[in-house]
Image 1 (cartoon, rainbow, N blue to C red):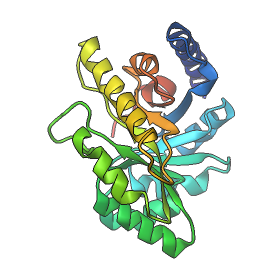
Image 2 (image 1 turned 30 degrees about the vertical axis):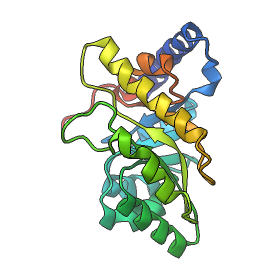
Image 3 (image 1 turned 180 degrees about the vertical axis):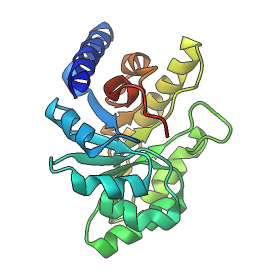
Length: 231
């Protein structure tokens, strides 16, 4: 697992440089180690390197992997969630980053109430305008937040987006700056019980752009663990 330590050391330097260029505090930026297809041993090794948040894409994979990791990892769901799997999501995850509808949010709230807990979530916004990509339209964000703010067992902690799959830096950065502006609007909108603590944006191929635009939660997988093994 030495490659994880080496990869993370190099990544940390890149994050620090990007933060300094943007006039930001590197310590204010957290990293989610996206552990899709990775072993429990790899998650534990990442934790030992200081990466204390693991991100999973699928309910079933998390259900199999989480019991095998003894370290006190914080588990985030970063992939699309079907409403009929809300109960398992509440059971398995500390934060769901991919809430993109009122129906899903209410299902999570209901299941969290039954479990006697509060589930923390991010609202996923499709700032790239990509067809077929999860996330609500930016214009629908405020009405969704207003509808969800009164829920007693669901707490909105911020926003998430996926940057455009493009080599055009301006286009990619526009996705990220757009999310930051939406977060600023929500933060000053007077929505009780809603906080904009997190802007989750930036993956292995574009995280430096995301840092420049205000991300404080990066989702990094292959940059930490290396190329994914064949399925």
